[in-house]
Image (cartoon, rainbow, N blue to C red):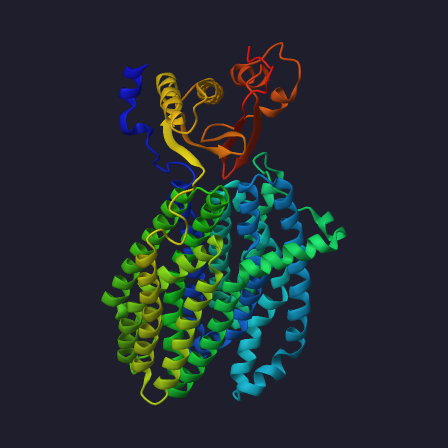
Length: 593
């Protein structure tokens, strides 16, 4: 056996190859979807600029704070749904996850109706209080009315999509973004460029595209891979319902603060740009915001992956995996945002020409874009890490970073009122980088990304491919490892046997290939808990293990039913199998034979 153990070498060391290792791959899938969403904003600006002129661009820019209200509401109630659900799943409580699902959907629908109906009724008089140009107000209403009217429905569907992330359906959900945005772009061109509609054409294109796209995540309700479903009976237990909403609000608090402050900052920035540069300045600001939206979409795609993975890993107290996951997402966001900044730095004139910026504004637009693109890496870093921090209960730190960034952005905008448009962009860059530098200093000081260095209950963590010789060798390694924690040789050998039989059972479910596994062994009460996560096909050990008759046990059943005192729990999460074997010492007088 020692020869097999030696043959394994470094292969047995933990490599975070499954849950945490999937963060990068899933991030790229989500980035594809979110970049498509940002591309729609970019296409909207292009179509508006080419077909409707700079006044339409100004209306889109001026409508930004109003449309940001929808995002504020989403962060307040909707953004925490997947974080809460995946942490419940990580703790092994599927019932709680489903009840969170139902509670949040009910709360989101009620909230949106209460807030948005009055806004729809009084939108014109409200806008007229702040904007004296009646033509601009009319264009803003044309652009926002259809989107706000249907946002309660689409917000509920977005919450459903977030909940389905627990099943690891990244490709399906990314296809929703692709379908939504491709159809939106096609309808943009049809309604505005061909049929000659005004800004309402862009709005209805977005609404129709969203409606078509959301048919894809809804199809997951009929999928065999679905493991979550909304439990609306939670409303009958009002105290429990309020508790989940309170937790959802708590989890979404940093995002809500971010969006509220962003709305305030955006309103101040838009007002200052309008005063300094008029409609031409607003057009330049609209071009920059569309580019910034692409960078934020990249960071949001990485954040979508990191929130799900780190939430599950944090629930499992797998702190090594948490660090691996968030670092992968940060690396992806930084690399892609730097590439975007270089593109804007090199080709600002082309970007201005594509948006039909006039010859008299083109030099100013080029200067502002070159200054503003320096903010992209800082934005990407802050977006990913601030999405991650609430998952590890660092809500106060998240709020502090948000207040620094947005507060300084407002101050910079106020200062630019007396200087000029170029100084406005320079001040914005400086404000965001200040918050990013504060975050970098904190990360360097902490070193462990705000989670413990390791779980003190952990005995050992391993990653192997399921080959029979490696399984046997790992069993020997684990038995030797347990010797340092327990003097009960019989119990240690029994744990090693249960692990070996468990791995062989999983291998039997996938006879055609060697699958990857992550294995964690830790103290659990009066025994040892072994968690085995694999990327093979789904299996169902529990019905067989539940029976009392051990007449025809399989490999794993023999280890459990015939006296080795193991409790078994199985789950399917993030498209991976999660098997937990709790091995306890045999009670006095009971034989293991």
